[in-house]
Image 1 (spheres, rainbow, N blue to C red):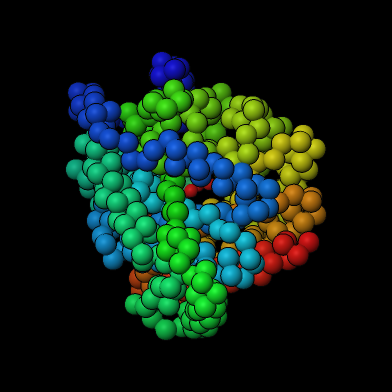
Image 2 (image 1 turned 90 degrees about the horizontal axis):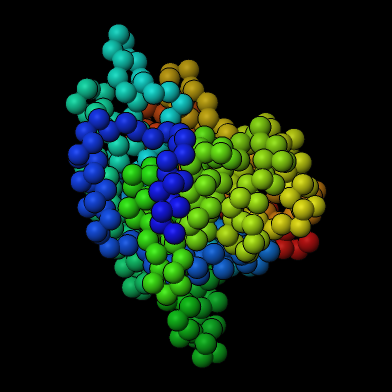
Length: 446
Ligand code: PEP
Ligand code: CO
């Protein structure tokens, strides 16, 4: 079983860093192999079943978090604010559209970044590009940009402590529906969270009603299942954490519940597709605007030959300008083939622009427009829009243009903290959730 993975890893693999120090790499991989799994196979199976529900329109997936997590960003406050933001968005969606929401962080492992160039030039200095803190440092100097295998182990420990806090928050009472108000505390006042407060009051009334009926003690009110996923990019990290499940003898990547394959690494003959075809976790694949129907059908055959509900998620990231033309042919071909993967929208990665002052950014209106295009395309094809994948943070950053605060190009410099792509801030995230809830309501009325 595991030897098949080793074979897959030896196929041509894109976006893998060169480590230079072979012995340090061997040590790091051996260390990772001996460390405990971060998640358990049974949890990944539960997630797969829930994603299967979403694929059939009986749930909705909300996946969100940083483009690139950082080691220094794994503080209690930052993790808590991200989890709170996702919980708030989930409540807006659940209450607004009366549909169960599967919650997943791009967290506890989202450290590796595929890049379009191998080097970065500033002035007359050219250095290796930043590939995420699991590989090298963001600082633009030779020492920091040197790939260091010890970072693989640091990524594991940072993921473990992040996941531990997520589990504590979501299982220890903080995520109870009785706390809906408190999730809004600590965030600056603005129209989006004022609207959230109103909704929280309605939920309070509903909870009091359930209490009065004697149904308020349900465990479902107190705990939330919160899953984690990241791009399964680096074999030097994923392979040592891929293990055989003692219950079933099947292979799971225990670095996360959910792994996705990026737009740049999903070649049918490349290592990533072969590797994850052997792994039993639910798997996602990103699809850009040039994806052809035959590519998608081939991906289904490779990754989900048995058509297991929830096994395969397509994360479309077409860009607002192209989604209405690029997505429908894919939906129709898959629908006609009888397969029912989960379709979710990533309205971030097809909408990147560079502002006049050099910042990488995205327009909030383009993000909304892509979400709308996603719902329209599914309505036309008679298929199911099953979720959303966004880059967000609980912080008041100024990375994406627009939204209630009308962030403009000059504001970008105020608080731009992402090491990679621009993220929605807390209020933009809530605003987006209200919009998605409106769209989703129409689906559930259909
Ligand atoms: C990402 O999700 O951060 C990413 C790199 O996405 P994509 O593969 O869609 O470009
Ligand atoms: Co990104």
